[in-house]
Structure formats: C-alpha cells, structure tokens
Image (cartoon, rainbow, N blue to C red):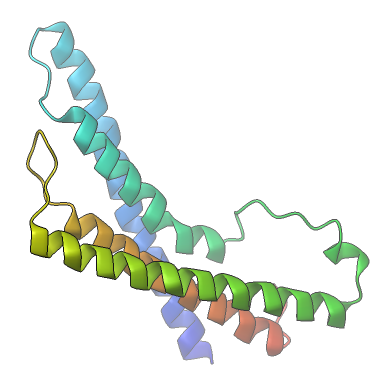
Length: 160
C-alpha cells in the first residue's frame, strides 16, 4: 500500500513539474511578445502558444492539486457527520469522480488518436493537436490513480 501511495505521489509531483514549466513558458512568451510588440515585431502564434500552455498547466496540475487537497472543498455537511458516515460518503464521491476521470481519459485518448489520424494542426504555427489531447488523457488517468489512493487511505484508516 505504501509503495502504491508513494508512486501516485511521485507521479503527481512529476506532472506538477511539467505544469510549472508550462506556466513559466507561458509567462515568458507573453512578456517577450509584449516587449517585441512595442518594437513592432510581435511573436507569431503567441495566442496558440499561450492557449496550449494553459491547457498543459491546468491539466498537469490536477493530480498534484488533489494530492495537496487544494481544490475547493465544501465541508458543511461532512463536518456534521460521524466518522463512519463521512468516510462512506468520501469513498462514494471518490468512486464517482474516478469513474468520471476514467471516462474522460478514454475519450481524450480516443480524440488524440483521431487527431493523429486526421493530422489536424493549429492555424498559425501548424502545431499538431494530438499531443495535447494525449497528455490530458494521461493526466485524467493519473487523477484516477490519485482518487483510488485516497480511497485506499480512507479505507485503511489513515488520516487525510
């Protein structure tokens, strides 16, 4: 159990590093474009680069954010429940969320394969869309692992 939880933790941390690199890239492109735009030489495709980077930042940060319990969490009802009822509710919601992210991951991988076959690319830079869809699919599967790890923790009686 500890090996699994450690693996999920390291996977979430690795994806967070990629998200951080994406955020840094997005900021650098934006700053350079603003400066160069004042000099009359804007960076072509800045909108596409920032949009793709934004997708990477959000998608690759989901698992890390879940591991750190940094998502918005409304606990008005759960705090009023006893521990057993609260744990049952937490497990049920995590099962539902894991199912959602599993379906999302399957759909995104399917979309990535379709985008690869059709060769669809962005209009300005001609960057292919399929790596982004594939990466988001992997992130969705990673989020499933995070949710399963949370279920294992709850059932194992470990404090969150």
